[in-house]
Amino acid sequence: MFALAFLALSLPCVPQVIQVDGSAPPETGLITQDRLMAPGYVLFAPLRSGTIYLIDESGKPVHEWKHGLPPITVYLKDNGNVLLASRIDENPTFFGGGLGGRITEYDWDGNLVWEYVLSDDKRSLHHDLEILPNGNLLVIAWEHLSAAEAIALGRDPRFVEDKGWWPDVILELKPEEKTGASVQWEWRARDHLVQDFAPTKANYGTVADRPERIDINGDHRDQPPLTDAERKQLAEEARKLRELGYAGGDEEKHAESGDAPRERRGDFLHANSIHYLPEHDLIALSTPHFHELWILDHSTTTAEARGSKGGRWGKGGDLLYRWGNPRTYGCGSAANQQLFFQHQPDWIPAGFPGGGNILVFNNGTRRGEVEYSSVDELVLPFDPKKGFRREPGKAFEPAAPTWSYSAPEKTDFFSFFISGAQRLKNGNTFICSGKQGRFFEVTKEGQIVWEYKNPYGGELPVTAGNAAPPPKGPSPVELTSCFRATKLPPDHKGLARLRGAANGEPQERGEDAGKSTGK
Image (cartoon, rainbow, N blue to C red; front, top):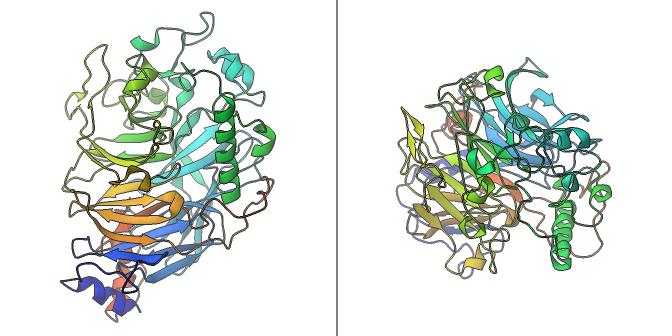
């Protein structure tokens, strides 16, 4: 099977468009294949499956890793191992979509070679991770502050849950031999706040004068109380996430009225993606509750990251750049919002079309009267010598994306949560519409040249631990949903054993634990 899969990739010409059954596209598996697609393999871990899949361009599985855990995201390392972020439901404090707690590493043969757990009443991993060039990992975690601590920092008491408040932290971890890791660097959102609500509390100031700071009340500013219809919609979305098994923890007890996602949530930012630019030692972070992407300076020390001085750009851990919703820093209104609960803002690699730009999956949740998703490419106002440019008193540029993809009939492409996109070396863009488990590749002109609907998933229990049981009846959410999928080029270092199998060579294990080129 390996030999046939690799041979198919090496063929110079693929039939123009393949409708797999000869007449109409199938409901799952390979839908469309065109010669304009980029060669490669797709790596993904369905949310309701205990298996990681690697498929070839014909949609055939060429390798699997069995893990049996409730997964979030997966990445292939250069040595052929995979890193999997997964959920631990039995957490006394944290709950909701993207709940994590565990990272495991498996070798090509599926053996567990490393594990790290951070899931207690003080902190929990969630959503995403990033592999650094030195083999360390950047991870996102929630940290718990009491309601009193949040109010002392300037949070409006009406928007603090009795059980506390969870601003995000970023940790750089150095994996230890078989289990655990040491923290090499840390950034905390709590250190970079501003508020204009309580003059006697910490961080008081004018929000519009401090765009490098995070408005502690920015996630609910200018938002009227929820209507009954909005409450029902949010409750339905929360129910779907629980049914899918994506929202772990005891969410029912915290959100019985359906208002926790906005009015009293502990999850302040809900950071759902992290990416690293080694050329300039920068971190991109997605904060969907603010509908923004942020860029941070990783060149700081941990001490500098807690303040506003130091690092390559001299601003410590303050925000270097933000984009998507300028009203969060007093430079716009709802009419200026351009991101809507986005995922995966990643830098396009140097040497690729658009290299140095950022590509982001714009989910489009509550975008307007018509909800639809898009993939947007941004040209950043960045000077390698001076940093990010911004005219005082105005929003960060660009005024609009330089390129976008949405479906001709906009509502045909919509995933209200999860999902992602990546630019490929031939200039195409690979997209994961996560809710549907739909992966597809488009040209610059928007032509779909490869499409696949994930057929796997559903074998894991709907819930685990103390998560709420799903309602009875048909599922409104696909069991095949995927947090993210990644397209890997045929020459990716981590695929050496697959190439060896195709050529009949001995399958030696790689030892290079460096940065994956697949993210």
